[in-house]
Image 1 (cartoon, helix red, strand yellow):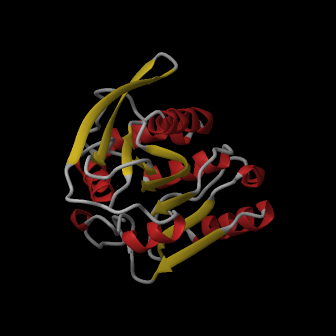
Image 2 (tube, helix red, strand yellow; image 1 turned 90 degrees about the horizontal axis):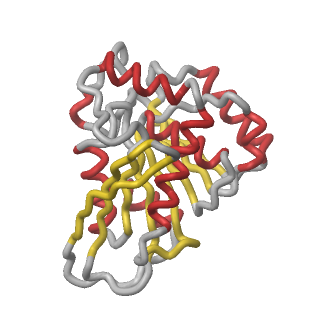
Length: 234
């Protein structure tokens, strides 16, 4: 599904030779905060190619987001897994993750600034073709890329995987330039029907080019096999 989604949203790639993935830890900043992202690309691909910003779940930039970035790089993209929380801030429990994510969910301006910083770092990479850049995110990251789109960022598209859909200012939907794809678990306890309906209205009122898929029986974090399928836990 991921391959299909991105193929639809981004222009066709140039030919890919034998894969040789290059991985780099990249230190960058947003204001005075030091962030530490993860860059991956295939050194066998020549010329500029599409870039994808990957935003992590509420546990911070870790193995899951890095693996997703590597998968995208193996398909020929330049992938940059952004760091929203800051260098070394990696929650170790649901309580810690909820507290850290809450700082940004309650301050959408800061959340957007952190996402924009990641996008700017991706665009600095010489392998990236700026008109062909998209952003994807998982859970907290899904919320983040939607906020990035609401900021008016120049993106070809954004994909939210089981992300929150709420907006502090629904009128910001009119700022969205990117195509928007939302992949949602119909049984996700963290995204109630009222939130889904409000999101639909925001997209329609904003004149956004958007598409949403609700998977019956799917709960929160449905792309992560380690998350289980208990609706009570999400």
